[in-house]
Image (cartoon, rainbow, N blue to C red; front, side, top):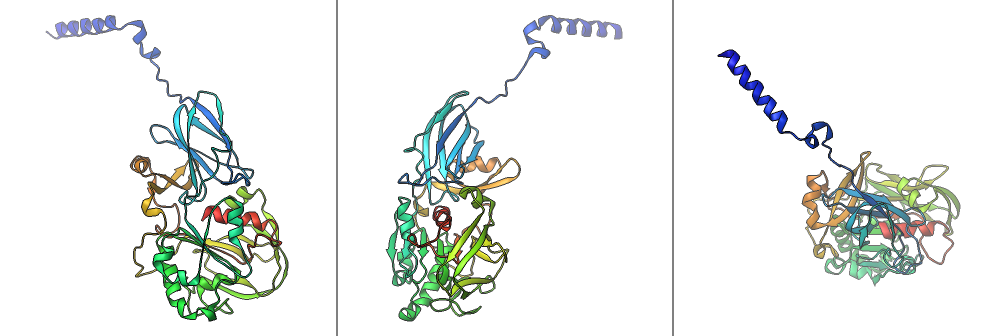
Length: 392
């Protein structure tokens, strides 16, 4: 009986082998895992086409939400490898919440599609406001890029309903006028805390550090009354003297976007604000003095405070985009704004909701000890300030 069973097994194996065609041989079965790609090229420009924009994120996704990503060089030029097919090409600065553009494009196998200048202009999504200053005119730089900003006052800063409609507020040096508006500042301090804690971003220059850490028109010592940034995080005193200071760009991302990493900053007025102490875990130094390593330009998105009410800020409540953190090969993390409908698929691939660093809901605070007046002698600092505008 045992031999008979072996005979039937042998017959069965022979019959299975005789049913397989030559074309089905395991050695000849192959799976094509090659993804056909083409290229998208172009030059990222400001809204009015006057300024090329370096350091912009350019990306798209395939049908499985794999990201294809590159950045523009200091002249705004980029070449993106992308999968064949119809895609939306995204161009963004910062995390994409304030400036972004979407382009429909058809990518063909092994071909390069060149986008024209009208397609690659970076659009303003944010609502921007500024306080007029005595020494600075950031609004001129904004306008020179082709973007719009609304002038508001210190009385407006004291009204949370007014400032909550904006995404970004620029505080020009000399705008504080503390003695004329002293009664407003408790409300201003509280409102700026609410604004930043809920995603609004602020830029302040020179003397206007007093909006951040307290003081009158400027700050003369550490731990002064007022402000909304904790005193342990920053101290600045008006002890700088006029002259040219050699500086170094301390951020790789900023240096790539600008195309240079050293510059001379003209402090054309005396008594400018020197950053005398800061918490390096709270602030990122973007520009520093070459000789002393003293910080000249810092930013943070780590602002938190207890008891801050949840308040809708700017365009965020109306947008169909969400900020996510995506990890690229090489463990490089990037914060981007993506269509909200895509978020579950990206999370399934390992993305996380919110920015890659900083507090989840915090906006950015940028501070420069140097001025931003568009008509002044600020040299290369001018393009640094263009970067600030586009990356808040």
